[in-house]
Length: 340
Image (cartoon, rainbow, N blue to C red):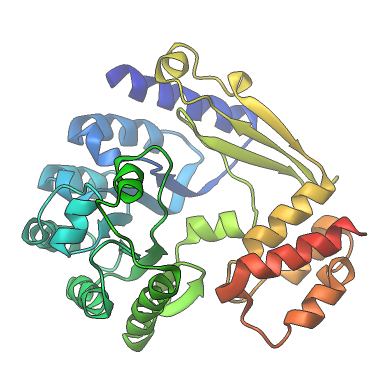
């Protein structure tokens, strides 16, 4: 793990120089369980990042599982400039946690959240999942109520996605575990959504809710397709050429040893995104936001308005909530794009 940290630092420094980045606006440590690094390794990483002249993000986030958090780890985060933490709570329902192989009992999670709110008051986000085994309307409402007791400023509310090859999928196929049906699962998510809105949270993106001024700036950059760099095994970065309205995506292999041996973006797989592909991704990401696509930015990037690309789709959907039915909207939009 020490070699891994060394490689990540080397990778980040090289990419910032290679892509001529003059300012890092946001940074996010995640896509896994960063708290598994431990406090000392995180301290080394943060010290190295903060020594880079262009590294001064206005928002610096880290993900963590509550079960693996320590006071020392949280202290290192704060002292190292991290000002936002995202905690994977998922649920307080003991049977549901056990069914999806989440360690840690609810009372331990609450103890850890109390610690998190002490270090990250006003900069704390929580993930909640609905559609889990043994969940019902009452338990989802209870999950929201309990998480709000710790004063998060941001909540991500997801419906369960069952990954292939996982123990959960095997248990579902064998009938050992039953999931709510599609209609019930949708109702449970809407129950959580209603509870968050009633508590003053703004539903600003498909799965994300925030108090005023507390939207995740880093993720908004993804949704606005502003371009980003990624470092680490399986990490992906997208560099956009605004002059020609195309992009390159760099994706590292998931092989840890390969990355440690040669943490260089030139070893990443490269995907070329032409103008059509980039338009699709802009629609896919931009309409995740409640405000929809940034029309002015779209016109600057592609030389034409969104309305010129998908006029029939926009006319059909003008009275509908695109964000709540995004997949259906995108099917229509992509179908119309393919005919132009």
